[in-house]
Length: 306
Ligand code: AMP
Image 1 (tube, helix red, strand yellow):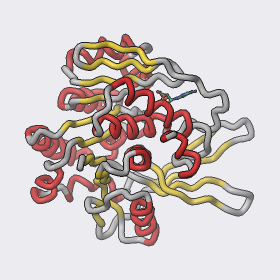
Image 2 (tube, protein in one colour):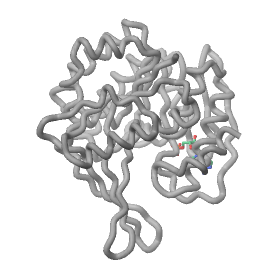
Image 3 (cartoon, rainbow, N blue to C red):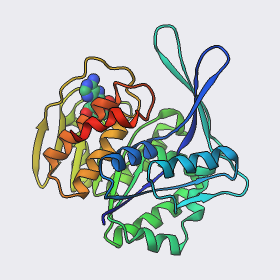
Image 4 (tube, helix red, strand yellow):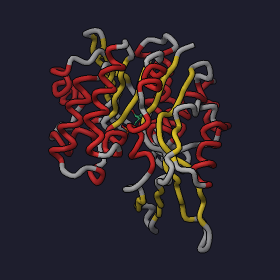
């Protein structure tokens, strides 16, 4: 059985309902990817590597992971911290805004839990995914330890997969984000950047620009997302452009890239070629953006498989 581990943070999501209620769910880039991967490829063992608290919402979060058949053996329980939280609000023009309470979240401590026994188990996997958000969330003084642990996984032959997923507000400075991203690209085997991720930091605004930027890092596989624009891949010295059918009824693009990543990696893990994997991933993302929120209903998402 193929195995993939997703390291990062899942948060409590609050979304305004009517005047006096809030709808509560769970979301976070690596969690979203794990959910969508598992829904399409139940045969791939999929786990989340994170830390939560001992509070009731953390319990519900773990129960939600289990409902989605995500392996929770690497969901560690911090003794005093709690899960991070964010509020999504939509104004009268449909513009969304986000407020976060995550600066002291349990997930920031995840590296503390990656002891040698845990690493030995993670080293039996096939892929290990982390994102720019995962990196930003890890406490600054734990990052060098994180890179050491990642190096151990790489030396054990695990494919390291990185999506920059740049969120300016999570970083102390652009320089800090760039330094961490370049380190990530250097160590990774597969990268799944969106063109937009690199625009603000590096002034890159096209798929070709991303290829030129990434080439010196020697990635085995590069998959470049560009909203409704073509996906461009570079693998085994082969450059391919994959047309995307634009969705006309876009409701909410939250987690389009996450759904794409999860399904793409699931397809690759189960032996599909790059082109077929991109087509399936784009189909999945195209469904997700026709529904509000990060996680779309199971029944709607089932169309990916048809
Ligand atoms: P993004 O993170 O915005 O680059 O989007 C990730 C993926 O979601 C893209 O590579 C597409 O497969 C899909 N996607 C995003 N926006 C659209 C759209 N308007 N129509 C169809 N697919 C889209």
